[in-house]
Image (cartoon, rainbow, N blue to C red):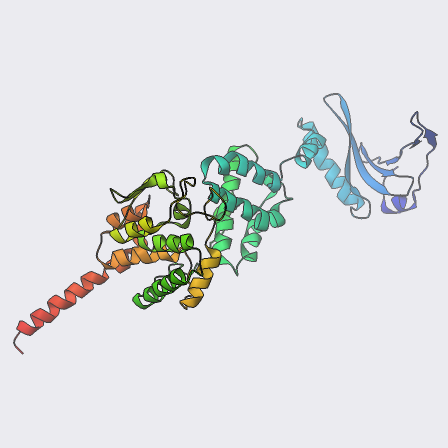
Length: 396
């Protein structure tokens, strides 16, 4: 018969049941076939559900695929789909195999796991890999996790990025991570080449994150550290760690994970075998050397900044730092701002950017270039002094 809407609506299930060897009831299929398009039919279940199907043969094998439920698809739409699929079959394709392959394709959850295992854990520092895992868990997974890798579009990435507009810094880091993952997906054959949509998403503008301590703020901070040290209210290793961060410009992890074997007080240096940019040497001022000499040393503990447990180091400074900053009225100050302040003082004294980059352990000159505007201040001061002197020699 020719399938029409009235025919399908009036059709009822006609079939019989039999009992299989396992004791379960088996029902025969009930299908209405269309006279216009060979292979197009409507399958009716014993419960009255009706579905458009397409029966075809490819390479000698008989296939039966669903086109969609009746009511959702009209008869005309079902015919259009059937003709499209039959055209692909004529070209030698098997739509059902491709559909099953896509259903089993990697999701963004799967890609995230592959990214962490094959890239982050191999190519990145443990802290960076941990940060990537957190972004995958907190942002990317809930938004894109169930999507197939090949189905992620510009619209999907843009929506994820825009959903984090209240956190522009985080939004841009998440975008960078998704972009890296999709680039690797292309390399691993999970997406078509040059299909990464992230390159078309414009990043949010980020407020400058550099915070420099003024002379008065330095004074308040050092006073709070002295009072905490003298009163015994804070862990003395924590206080020593903060002082070393101020005096060396090191990163937090570099100080908390500093071992005595890496300290050379005779030469006034720290020989760090591993840092964010690889192995580096930290040159110690005499004041920093004094701080290290005053730290109590336990023979059985290799760590400079000892933890509460035997043979351990402090894992963070959150508690002591928060309390000391509150006392110094610097509650907006981050630990990493001490590194910026170290650099700012060096730039203000007229140190060259290459020398400053060497002290900070920067691997790229552009990283140090953010302090260029501070390095110009002494030159302005020198120009003012010369200008005042010359002005005094000029006749009025």
